[in-house]
Image (cartoon, rainbow, N blue to C red; front, side):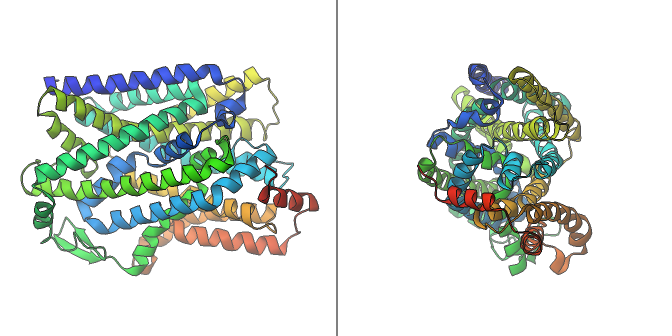
Length: 509
């Protein structure tokens, strides 16, 4: 380990110690399971906004998106970013306040709880199915975060991948297990700041070393489709493919995923006052637009740096920010510390998502499967023990799934994102905005959305051509159709449910 790497390591270790201290501090605030999973609905508007977006923008913001832009140009990365920005704004605009008020009215502390409480599901069928969906998609999602940490520290410090991945996972597991939701949300807020600093520094340093924007354009303009929004560059052959209208719509469909993301929806439920959500929406939307735009441009700038010889060629495009950080760290002690902050930012983007996913998956098992399926009633202390033990067990499974160092971060996140978007997104929207939705419609939408994700991903999409559509879009549509048809063909909701729906729509503040 050279001197530059040592200084970078000091920055990262200092950051990790801060995170651990936060976890220990908030351990004293977890008096109930509600505190552990929802923070007692005490989040302020700024923490709500930034923790929601930090938990959303996982390692794909600082590794996945720049990697896609680096290898294939503007089209796919840009349309994905646009779809995510639109989805972020609409989710905050139409879902956040209604879900906050409705979940408080039903006293729901998890998304599966809300589904069952909304439809007066006494047998808790909806919450159990929803919990199973969360486990299916969140464990590999969390595994992708652990894998990102392994790649990050393995590349930077020349540590063996598995060792780096396990150490990273232990840090995340510790502060999340000890501190719960408030620790996760507070660290996510700090991590969003670190992520922002990292993006800005890499962007500015990259432009300078690439010779300016004009030089970046000059070095890439001759590559077929690289700077186009309607073509995609194929690095292997040096040619381009048309990025058709159908592909654009398919990529924009990433935005639909927001309506079904449990770790984001929980932030809406946890804010202390629903009237403060307008402030949160503005902060979150501005941050997402800027951070995604910069992430895409970093990929393009990085390619320009390789073309002009500033950066040496490397095998994994998802490590482009790491490569730029290493270059920055060669300029003296101060820059080595700054490079460490950048690496901490990448680590932060992974941690902020992994901690929220672990909490959501843990709550699904301990509250909705152990509590509802097996009808086990525990004291507050025993419930806390079960919650924390479940979180650790799920983490171990995620570590096992992350064991392969060749796994694609962007690919895993894409599939899990589609799964939640299709299984939960339509149910959330119809539960909040269509009072005729009943339990059977919600159940059919949840199951159909989740099943179609697998069918489209592994059977239909490989056929190519017009079938090469991101699985979230067709699955989301099928789930919506299923909810409407089944709800209309089965018994209407009871008077009690309708009255509660109207009360949630127009709460007395």
